[in-house]
Image (cartoon, rainbow, N blue to C red; front, side, top):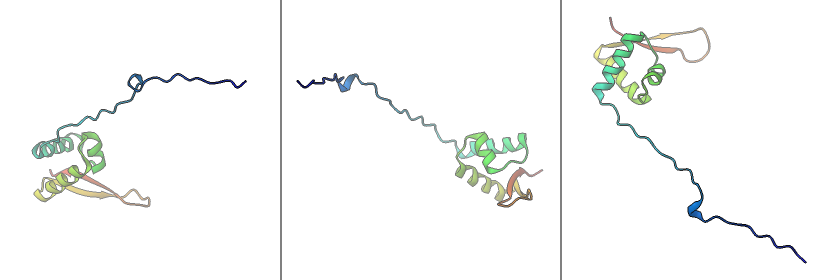
Length: 97
């Protein structure tokens, strides 16, 4: 005599499902980004684009575009610091005194 196996199935509606929630934030206004970056450079001194991105949470491309506009206007200057190792040197941005 063969044994029969019975399994209990739970209805789909009672199964727990993981739901992903996406949080969206309003992008900062261009004037807000400029003032935020300039105040950060004023307080912290010279920083790289990556450091600015991490500290502010502003997207990398927005930081890059804003820094280019600040360079053109003469508000910010950039300089290269070589550390004696291979690879690309670090590019720092600082406010013009």
